[in-house]
Length: 201
Image 1 (cartoon, rainbow, N blue to C red):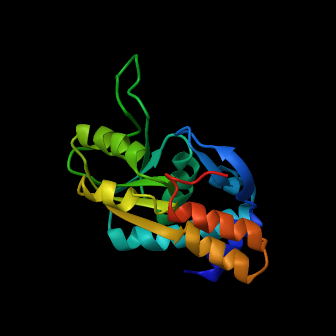
Image 2: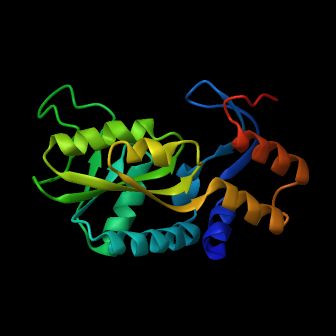
């Protein structure tokens, strides 16, 4: 883990502690709001630099942003890495081309799917299917934060390798070490991450 990366994310104030309802309907003691990252240019630039290093190792033809949080991240990566960018819709358009894809994507091109974060990875599978439907190859997905709640295994089942810049546990450890989270919130959140299905406050 890069401490510079962890600091950049903390400086952008992406971590919120309390009691939150997630999209799944489950409760969580932590809300990770990576969508605010582009509002902090210095932090955003550092995170994108780290992402570009990973992307270059993958030797892809196209970066694909997942609607919506992955779009600004993919755009910034594409500019710095000098790669073409597309974005993938959650659902195909109901008019015009009826496509999942916005942008130019050719059959056989190697694509990396970009998003802000991964929990169980189920939403990523829909994006991957949209890319593959166009005849492109998608064997990699890059996220900034991995919550380590099943995403790696669920993507592996689709023959996609997950790459992350940092895990949520690593970020919490950095915050504890640098006194950016109090002991109670740290313990509650780590307990939650150990068993999110059974967690209740």
